[in-house]
Every structure is written in structure tokens, then in C-alpha cells.
Length: 90
Image (cartoon, rainbow, N blue to C red):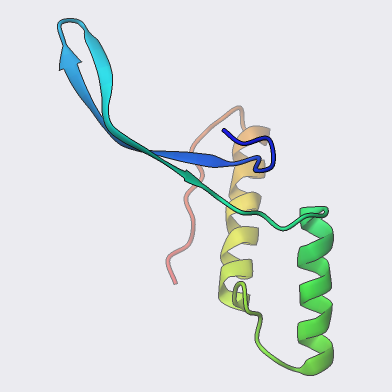
């Protein structure tokens, strides 16, 4: 993995050899990431979207709404000792 990229994906499969699984057909995909603090970049994009009255290039309001619902369900589950919390179907 390159020190310049913090994220490398390994694509491939595993084959069973005896009681072990060995990787086969492996290939690497180095993801190029923007520099800077991720939350700051997201906030900056949000503000620009509002100021220019344009949709986000990264995600929609629907994605944000679903993310908040998921985080809320995770919080409720943690508060209940890990009990499953189901999301509303829309």
C-alpha cells in the first residue's frame, strides 16, 4: 500500500485449501482521496449548495435523512443494550 494513499481496496476471491482459505485473483485498487478534514469538506459543500441553491454533487437530502434515521436507530439500540431497532419503511 502506498503511503500517499490511506485507502487501498483488495479485490479477489478465496479458495479453500485444506482447512485454510487462500487469496486468489488478487488485484489492488488505490483510492485517491482529497486532502483535508472530511467533516469540514462536507460542511463546506453543504454551505456552497445552499448559497448557490444547487443540489449536492455528493449526496441528496434523501441520503442525509436516511443517515440520520440510521444513526438514531443505532443510538436507541445502544441505549437498550444492543436490542434490535427497526427503521420505518417509507
